[in-house]
Image (cartoon, rainbow, N blue to C red):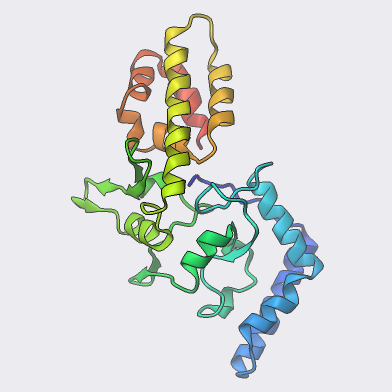
Length: 245
C-alpha cells in the first residue's frame, strides 16, 4: 500500500456526482432508495466512467488496486460502503480503485472505533504510519506504536480486513519487490558516480507494491541498507524520502 494523491475531477463530472447524491439522499429520506439498483444504474453513466478513468490515472500506467497494489484495479470501490452509508455513495473523496479480491474481502465490513474508520484510506493518509512489513515472510502487518505501547488499531483493522498477512501470493511478490529495492540501494552505495536522480528513478520503477514508503518513511529506514544510505549520504536520502511524499 502507498499514499495516493487524489486528482480533481472535471467540474461537470463532480456536479453530476453531487446531483446523483442529492437524488439518492432524497430517495433515502422517502424510504425509496434501493442502493444496489441506484448504483448499477449510475455506474454506466458518463460521469461514473470518468470517475473510473480518473482513479486509474491516479494509479499510473499499471492501474493497480489501491489496497493491495498487486492486482489490477477493476472497479470503483466505496471506502465507506455504499449500503450502510448511502449518504456517501457518490462523494468523490469516498471513491477508490479496487481489485476483485480486496473488494470481496472488504464487502460491507467497515470497522469503526469511536466513529473513526479502522481501515486506511490511501488517498487521505500515509499507510506506513499504521503498517509494517516483514522482509522475511513478505507479510504486511500492523505497526507497533511506541507512544501507546501497542499495535496500531488502524493497522490491525486494515490487515485483518484485507488479510494482508494471510495472502501467500501477495507475500511472495511483496518480498520480491523488497529485495529489488534493497539491491538497488546496495548497488548505489557500492558504485561511484551514480546520481540521486538515477537511484530515485530506479527505485520508483522497481517499486510495484508501495514499499518505498516502508523503506524511507516506515520502520524499514532503521534496517540496512536503507539505514546505511541515510547515515552516509543524507542528501541522497532526502531525495528518496521526497519521492515517497
